[in-house]
Length: 446
Ligand code: MV4
Image (cartoon, protein in one colour):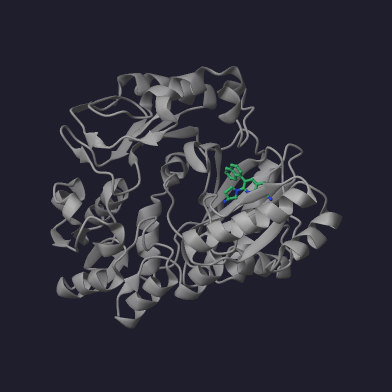
């Protein structure tokens, strides 16, 4: 039986995205909101809305007890966590189960495994999956780091076991630098994640970041929905994503897809998930991380596969078996997404909150805008600076680029600084147009 009512434990564009899927499925929705989000569209679009506290995230959107209480008060039988906030919090997934609420995502156990990057790495190694050469376990001292780095060869990278998103990461080119990097990374990891544990990998120079979307049901059926190319980023914040990737041919797609599904099966992954790979210039691929959530960039996959990923998440969580078979999945055309952030490209992409004066949205064929903003909307400084996503679909990559430029030119937000004006330079760049991109592309543009 499908859910009667779902609580969305999130805000912003992803809360709207989930509410839209629920409405189309005939499921009632409950929004939760902080004091800063009283005027937000997710509050307006949901059938009911519950105030869960002050603006600061840890008092509202990260407040597990308050969110579980809101679900109980409103008789919501399932919670969709969106991305960020509590989406990859194993304790929250378990708290839902303990309160007879379905968590729309993988099990608490899977989330915990994926969340400890060192444990995930060991799990992958045990499965015979190709990971980046590095330490088998936690590196507990600078001496140990140097002992492992010697045979591997420099440069190496230290990563936080409890982390992600670049924090607690340090690259070292020499043993001397590694000693300093160890203390820095460990301190940063402890401050950011409450966990100082580090592991070490060979540093892959100028890799591409390619990820595979997977779906797995509770009956053990798995499919993948092809890849997303996410190399265009700045300081670990993705800015442009596309699907497919022009670097991935049919053979590599099949290999990455099968590897992603193999891992998902082996760890009993249920619901939607992403398997992250680094691919070097010689097309050597390395499995990097499991992302146990729906991702910001999921729409580009939806556009080329025609699969509604959020709908699939809900069906899977309700216990239904996947109706889609791997052979049903065909990548049709090309899709690109630009993240629209309230940040200032002229000032090092610093957040630029404030009141939006007016918005003119792009439209026309092949254009999708996922956003919660509107005229006179107040962008507060409390949350992530993502205020929307502009997604286009077209028959091939050159057409998608032209369509994106056209749509960006139509998109106008006044009152605050945004990233809209920044993207023109990227789409006009010859190397970008050739598909000659890697994770350092934007550094090379400055
Ligand atoms: C790496 C790497 C090179 N070699 N690991 C960045 C975020 C975190 N999830 C992992 N990241 C990287 N790990 C090794 N061994 C390069 C990156 C990296 C990166 C990865 C994905 C997307 C953008 C990136 C930008 C810079 C560095």
